Image (cartoon, rainbow, N blue to C red; front, side, top):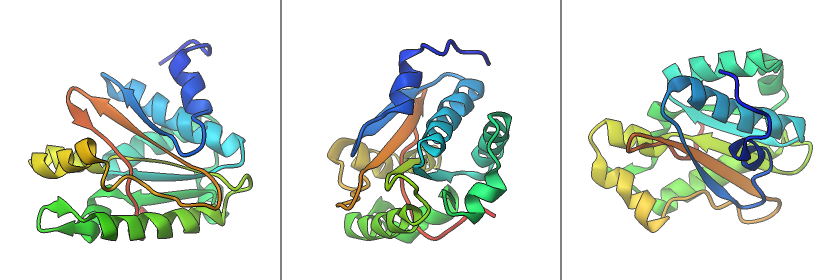
Length: 185
């Protein structure tokens, strides 16, 4: 997919600002892969660490998009600048019954951000994830909206350094950030 370099969404994803939370709408997987890989690639270029919390099918797509943009995913992971978490494995680690537990999530988020920050050359961390989407597509509408409406389990980096998160939404399905030690291999 070819998108003009001057697209406002590309500028926003390249420079999201500290402590930001963005939502990127998309209608197809090509645009989704372009948006998330642009967010990650621009972060890497600026020295930021990048956390991607993805389902395996989305990671497969994103890995191809990142490689197409010239990133050496293996080297970035080895140096700690790119941290990949499995969304399906991470989600159950902070659910109580079927709902996200804010204190548990925030503890996982802080630990994940701290781990990623060690690989950041800029001191900043970006993260993208699809935890809300996983809840929604598995039929847990209540769990998916508990975060969307209340903000109870949004990433909370609490200094030092900024953390920006992003999520993508498609046709009423939302993807959002989360974290734990469940890495994609």
